[in-house]
Length: 185
Image 1 (cartoon, helix red, strand yellow):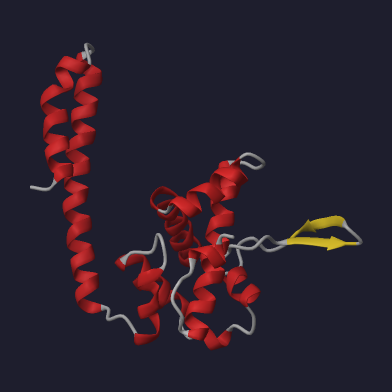
Image 2 (cartoon, one colour):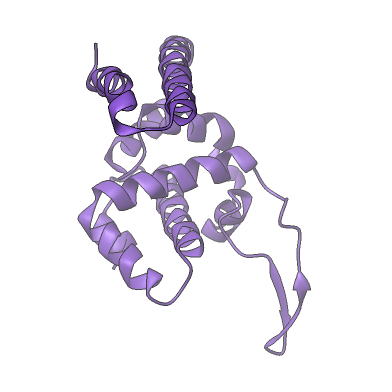
């Protein structure tokens, strides 16, 4: 049994002592049971995906990108396709829904564009990667905290996702390793 399973079992045993309301304790026990079931199903899905989808050689440098694990790497590979179809890094970031879609003329906002254009699965993958990167990479965490002082945390996570998408474009195009100091200077 993994550590998370032990935590859930311990929580289930202690829920009655922690929560005096019997109805609330029953609801929490039900949620814990659902979480245990979903963990098993997610593990089975991940094992099946890893067995069926093989990582293409040009995506090997993604091992070095903070926040991108095996499943996110496979998702980005499948949804991106050939990187050569994107002329510039901005085109790729836009396709990943990591770039804004404002129309400006003479410094004035003239409306918002097609926010639903692009690939929603890449958008999800890069936001997930951004959340993991902020959690586990100290340099990216400092960048995130600095930006959070001036903007909403959701907007800031999207900014981190944009930087990761742009870095991934260059990693794929140039076949180089991820450099956190270069991406989050």
